Structure formats: structure tokens, C-alpha cells
Image (tube, rainbow, N blue to C red; front, side, top):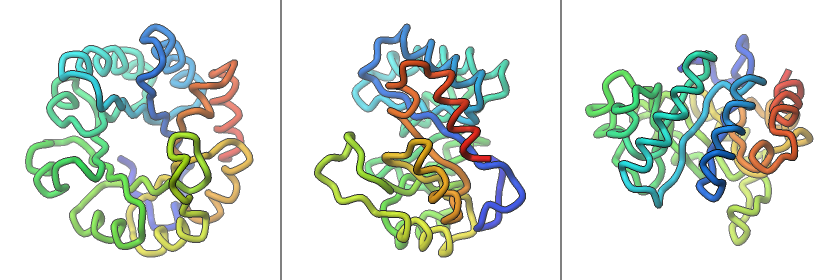
Length: 211
């Protein structure tokens, strides 16, 4: 993980693609390949319903696509699977192991932590997370009943910590500017690429907007 100052100055913003288990496997892998070839920096393999073997098979396929293209892979929640497939990192959430415990188990894996408040961001940094994913920033279909945190709260989280803050939630090309101006070190998206008619074009447009 590239460490940044709290404004993300001096390094190009990072583009994370978070996978969606609703997509058929072949389609998902084709989208990941398109994203990896058109500007994605990280692929986060996310499927809370999968068995360890199912997640292992998916993550292994993702690493096979991404490694030759210089794109890094994180596995959500499952440190064992991340280690087994030779991933680069693990993304922890509210139901995951505590960051300190994960750090003891994770070896050289980078650790990201999903947070929803400034207080949680500060706590994740104190627990030696490598980056924070903050959201959801804008309205999103994946959390239709939860009030978005907004750009102001994102900026407050950025100011409160000295590790990279990745913004997530309802982000498309039009939302990239305000998010980066708020100091985010990058964005994490799902539908903006996964649901696009042309995922390669969508990834390239997001990358262009981030410049």
C-alpha cells in the first residue's frame, strides 16, 4: 500500500473495484480483466455468502488476472483466503476480526478498514490500518435505507487521520471531483464499473476524471 499524507498529495488517486457476487463468475472475471487493463489499482474480492473454497477459487482467479497487469488484490474479511491465494491485502469491516488481531495473522498483507464515522477512522488508524474506506458518501442502491455521510463528513475523516482515505458509495464520474477535492486518496466503486455496458470504457472514464 502506498502511504500518503492526509491530503493524498503527490500520488495519483487510487481506483478500487469492489466485486459483486450477484454477477455470474465468467462475467465478473471479464469485467475485472477490463478494469485491470484500463486503470484500476486494486480489486477487492467481496462475497460474504461464499464458502472458504468458493472464495478461494474466485480470489485465485482474480489474482491470476491482476498480478501480470500490476493490479493489486484485496480479499474482504477472510485473511486465510487472502494469504492462501497470495493476495496483496485484506479489507476488514465491522464484523471482521479486530485490526490488531488481523495484523498478527496477516503477515505482509496490507490492511484496509471500512468505517462510517470520523471516530471509527481515528480508531482504525490507531490500530495501524494501512488505509480506510469511508462511506457511503453518496446515495447508493446497496444501502437504500441508510443516510449517506456526505462529502463534508468525508473531508472531516481525511483531516482526522494521516493514512489514505478511500471514498465509497454512489461514486461515478460526476462525483469524483468533489471526493478528490475533499482530500480522498482514491475511490472504491461497484456499479459504476460492474453495471456499465462497457466496463473498460467506464474504468477509463473514472481514471480520467481522477486526474
